[in-house]
Length: 117
Image 1: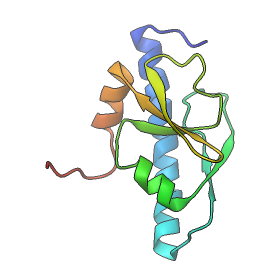
Image 2 (image 1 turned 30 degrees about the vertical axis):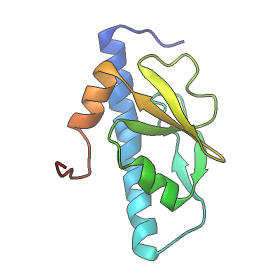
Image 3 (image 1 turned 135 degrees about the vertical axis):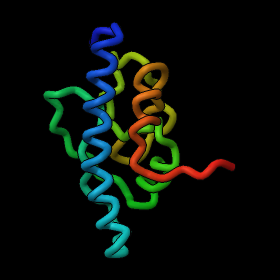
């Protein structure tokens, strides 16, 4: 279980953001090449020791990225993670929504431009 204090939550959120940024490069390449098959992405659970690779369809990846506070985790990696809850299960991954400090960090570092509705 990960400690729930603010500094550890912020550290975890910063790791998630780094993994999201790396996955954005994979997603952009897939989009540019018009790939449609499931591609390897890095688990974004934020645990520094995690090196799990998950496979996600580019269309699912793009749908998850519509929300700056959502991250792709390997199945089971949401267990014991504070300030998060599962919102969707994909074939080889799960989608987690961040709350509190991690959500604020995710929104502040969102690499995609957002347009107000």
